[in-house]
Length: 350
Image (cartoon, rainbow, N blue to C red; front, side, top):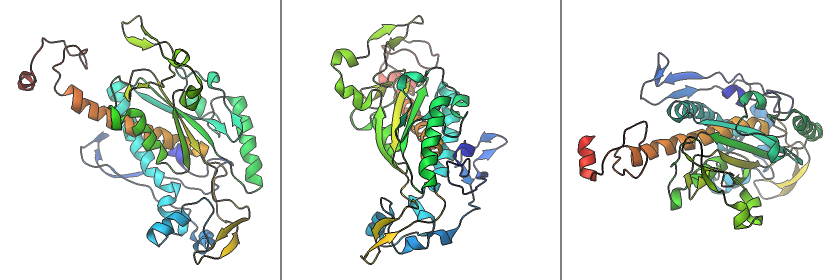
């Protein structure tokens, strides 16, 4: 998973070269987790601190330079510190573990792909989310599963790259085979937890789930997902405008999300800004930066969704599976149904 994240993958990403070799320091032995914290070390090998010398004097427009300074009164100039997307390697490493947990416990699969770069957009009806594969996503450098649209996206990035500018875009993420019942009412709704996780990623500016903002243009009769019973006797929905979540709880359908990323703020185009001393000036950034962060953000999005779903799976087990005494609910994990019992009796049986 980290190989999909690392810099220097293609001409449309930062030219900085990092092998991003992961070294597991603890928590794993003989191919299995040990129950202790997993520590992973990923060294930087191609850093150039001098590229950031001008940034010590002036704030980059739309960057966290200014707000970090406003808050803390000190900045990590070389590389951006905590505001650098380099911190997301930890999320990607942890997400790889979460993906394995989800696959083993519930056959849940998380996949993300680029659905828009600047003004080039992949129509919703082009991708079949039930048949989408990682091979389709990884078939080109922009990580768009449609080869024709992918070429248009690459051209759009190349155009701004050559003139020292940048563009943003949108990543669509799906989670298939998500168990029903994940999430909680009110403050800890599943979509709220997913939004929090995804909006914590650098450069994110928007989040949608299911029909998103387009759903606000529909009537109830147009938007509602009608229920039916499938051949296996399961309750399903004929459409999925809810995006796999209703009332903050997963309904078993594929969860569909979209995350908007702004253009990279560090560009080589001349811009107006101010110095730390409060003087207006002009600024041109140096260094090696992504003309579009979206292709490299795909594994970041997958990782955050996997981490949220893994957390929710564990919470659901603790809340609803450890002490099952409500026989109106279907048995979990292949257990046989039982007669009505009290909470105390259920605890004794366990």
